[in-house]
Image (cartoon, rainbow, N blue to C red; front, side, top):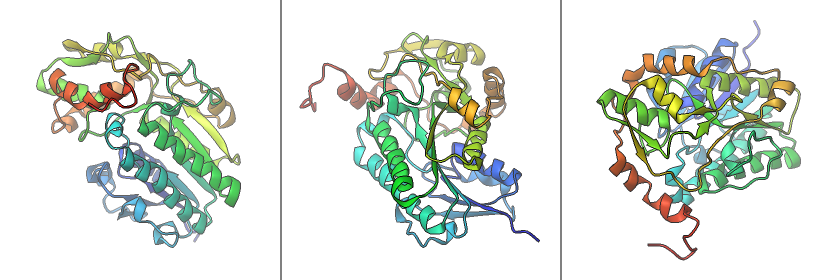
Length: 339
């Protein structure tokens, strides 16, 4: 009897990571999850309880050593673990650099020691800053805040491990992933979690700016398929932009969710539009987005009760949560302005 190939998923109890676990199990892998459950949640894997081919280890990636047994004989390593909230990175730069950059180095060393045949890094399109659109992989890099910098440095480390140690690496710069299991707790952040809780509470949607800003939303199962394709390809050292290639406005999301709107100030340093040029990934990996935006939102609405315990945001609490963002990201703020 042939043993099943082994895949390690860091952050496997998180939003994207848990969908990655689903896909790998469907494709006949034995999956080992590493997650400290600060961002992920047990319920994201609850439907897999008792699965013989799934092993879950509660562990901080920063505590990993190259001898970690979870990586033993691993064929693929998918690295999603990290801090994903953007706004708090302004106030917690040390944590972001420690987890997203140095934590990635710990995982790289584990993958190298295991002799993994592919390491796929979950990078962020935020590395481009206020980018020209549609944005191709050769666009200049210009991180605007610590989250973007930390994720980019993690990607640089991954490519360095290919260059120096020969670890087969590919990186995927995710634009705007959405879908079921998107995080519902913690800092002010993802628009879906904010809006769904507001809808459940009968409160108006807090729309930033005038709502015409576009985001290249890609449904999470399509994200997972792209990562598997990046692992299975013979190509190494590649960077791929990942989106639907079809930006949707925040106003369109509000229209689909149906509710009243209150407008709040536009945040400095955020793009008017994110739009991935997906020519490279569609050409080289034969990957295509399959879930239309309307269908993806409808799937989430069917599970809207999952957001019942999410924090309820209003203009005042958002203003307080983003105070440091406005202070440091406003162009007129000087380098010594620490009020």
